[in-house]
Amino acid sequence: MKKAFIPVILMFMLLLSACGSQQAQPVQPQSPEAGNETKEGTVIYQSEKGPVEVPAQPKRIIGLTNAPNIVSMEGTLVGVDQWTKQNPLFTEKLKDVEVVSDADLEKILALKPDLIVAGSEMKNLDQLSKIAPTVVFTWGKLDYLSQQLEIGKLLNKEKEAQTWIDDFKSRAKTAGEQIKAKIGEKVTVSVFEYDTKDFYVFGNNWARGTEILYQAMDLNMPDKVSPGYYKLSLEAIPDYAGDYLILSRRNGSTNDFLQSATWKNVPAVKQNRIIEIDTEASTYSDPITLEYLLKIFTEQFLAKS
Image (cartoon, rainbow, N blue to C red):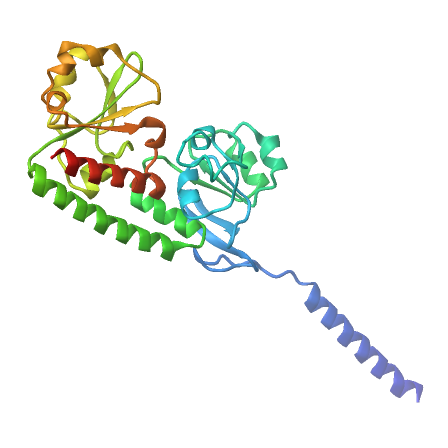
């Protein structure tokens, strides 16, 4: 009986050993494609620096860059850069949100973010990525609509972002056609900004509504204006002035040049073809800012034609 019983025991022990061995083997991780779900509650976002595993529904976002885009998608921010915080278009939405920078590692850690959005030029990116999944964007690498779409993808709201893009393009194009029908196809528009000492001119793709004017509405820049922005000597300002002027100014600021004969003799000034905008509310190209400026431009161009 003992001889028959021992092999049975041995077989039973070997079976248990085999099962235990199988359970102990580690599961080999797989690299899911961008946008595919990984472990519960996360997805892979294909960033410009490579794939990043991020929350499918982030609840505590630090926006060191592109915060206005995040706000427009109703993302839940717990930390934001100082420039967005002081923008009057976002004051109410961000009243309880902390101001942080890429240097504030301890403060960011204390806010317990589950997602950080940062600029590629910023410091401490490696340290930030240890606090929470960190997605990096390079300013200007994407056009203003593509950037909004990427924020939509990141927040798992791509469909909503694309719907807004299609609608905005359609409405802005229609507004541009209405404006050109009244002021003419070849009329030019300049975007100036001033502070107490200097004047600047803005070309295409540099906020201040330039994306709306020169891309979405397809209005014309003066020939002398080039992309980017640059400071003008006061005597050169008339050479860069279009038939209409968008004048960006900070609340309360003034410049003595506005009282000069040179400025007053600019044709657009003499004909009151000036549309003023608030600099602090016009420095981004997110949906909230774009909607704000689209309304101003449409109403003012048609009123001054």
